[in-house]
Image (cartoon, rainbow, N blue to C red; front, side, top):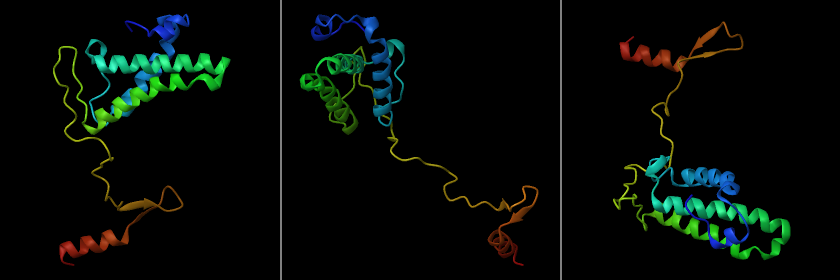
Length: 153
């Protein structure tokens, strides 16, 4: 993390104070954008916008923990940190914003966004199953009939 906002610096936080919150923010962003972009972003290839959003979410987490201890009713301005990040995430998910690498090239979204889980065994019907005793197997009668039909029996 290169720099902290002046609010966090004024409160006396150091980058090491925010390490826990940075890791939390990284995981949250990975989870939110994982269906849109290949994740996780690795090392030096983390786009500047993602670094910025991670820093803001980490600062939000740290400030929130400090303010709640003192006066929870005075934390509305802190919520703005999170709100701004969430608006950017929605923009990236909806395609209204573009994610650029550090060199300014567009980072492509995944060809098929992951919105549902797909399995090639979705319509699988087991042909054998356990009865009550694990040493006794039973054959699905429907499968036997289908095989007989296929063979012409």
